[in-house]
Image (cartoon, rainbow, N blue to C red):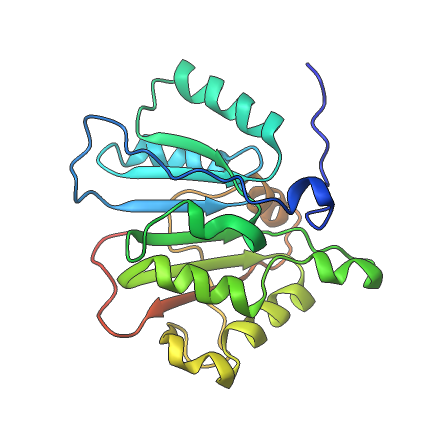
Amino acid sequence: MRKIRQHVNPLSAHFMRERAQPVARPPGLALDCAVEVELGCADAEFSFARAAARADMLMVGLDIREPCLARNRVRAADEGLLNLLFGYVNLNVDIDRVFAPASVDRFHLLFPDPWVKKSHHKRRVIEPALVASLTTQLRPGGELHVASDVFDVALEIMSTVEDPALAHLGLANLAGPWGFWRDNPFAESSRREQTTLRRQQRVWRMRYVRSDMALAPGI
């Protein structure tokens, strides 16, 4: 099996052209079913487990690496997961093309690439424009769930989301301002989280909810 390149530069010219496509809801799901999205899904272990556990929910995995998406689609078909879809996106370029406003119940951003070299920090995914786009696509009461095993990355994400300049977006930290959510509130976990916990390392987790309404019931 051909190895998929782990890192791609999202700022390269190849990826800066808008070409993400809207998600087409598969038949068989209720029009008002819950919609959850794993951003930068990679091998999508979290998405596969979540879709298998919630057959009444639409689960969508998005990534910039199209060979990875192709493999995930084959696996989803093999496992009969009709409620699991995969699509291309460059999060900082064309996420607005994928979902309509107020149509997503929960975004999961799990262990984004830390881009450790200082010269690569500009490639990190969370920036104010993305936070604004994700908030627009969340339904009232929807959630942005973030996890990282790198404290500096988690703190940078927190400082971006909780910047007073973005207070108008209405995202509230469920653990309180500048607070981390200690445990995984979901039964499912990504491969990276499983590895991190086996190494007895800390997962830095944040949960932000649109504060204009209560969080949608049930996780």
